[in-house]
Amino acid sequence: MLSLKDRPFIIFLKSMEKITIEGRDLLYKKVHRKVRSARLEFEDGLLTIILPENFKDGEKLINQHKRWILKQIEKFEELKRHSKKMTINRKLDINSFQKQVTKKIAKFSQEFGVSVKDISFKKLKSRWGSCSSDGKITINTLLRFLPERYIEYITFHEVLHRIEKRHNKRFYTLLKEKFLDKELIEKDLATYWYLLSNKKI
Image (tube, rainbow, N blue to C red):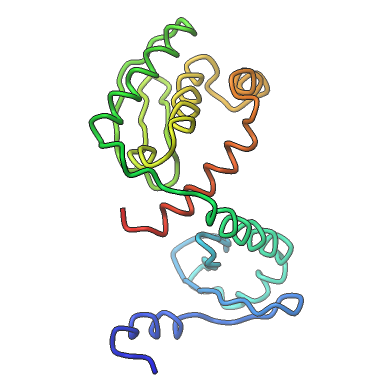
C-alpha cells in the first residue's frame, strides 16, 4: 500500500501521459510553453514534449520521431546496466581536487605552449568542463568523484581547446593521440554522469 510519503510520486505519475511505440508502453510529460516550434527532450529516462501554447497533438510528434525516441531509450538502459559496474570516489576532497586539476592544466598548457587566463570550479548542469574563447577554463566539481584517469582526460580536453576551439578532425586526432581508449572513456563519462545525476551529491 502506498503511504503519504509516496504522494509526490503519485502526483508525478498523474502528470504523465502514455503512448505505445512498437508494442512498448512509454510514459511522457507534455509541457506547453511560449515557443515557436515543438521539440522533444529526453533526460534521465524521461521523455518530455515541449509544445507551443496552441499546439495540442503531442502524439503525432512522438510518432514522427519514434526511431529517435527508441534509440534514446536503448542508450539510457545501457547506461543503467553499465552504471552497476561503476563506483564513485568519495576520497578526494574539493581542495585536493582543485590543486590536482590546476597542476594538470599547467602541465598540459606548457606541453602545448598555450596560456590559460583563469581556472574556475563550479557544479555544471550539462558538461564536465568548458573553455571560453578568451582562455577561461571551468571545471565541473562533480569530476572529483571520478578516478584520476577521467580528471586527466577532461583537463586535457579543455586545454586542447586553446589550440582548436571546435571539435573538428584535428581536435579529435590530438585527443586520441593522448588517449587511445577515448571511446571507452567517453562511454564511462556518460555513465558517471547518469550515476551522479541520480545521487544527492
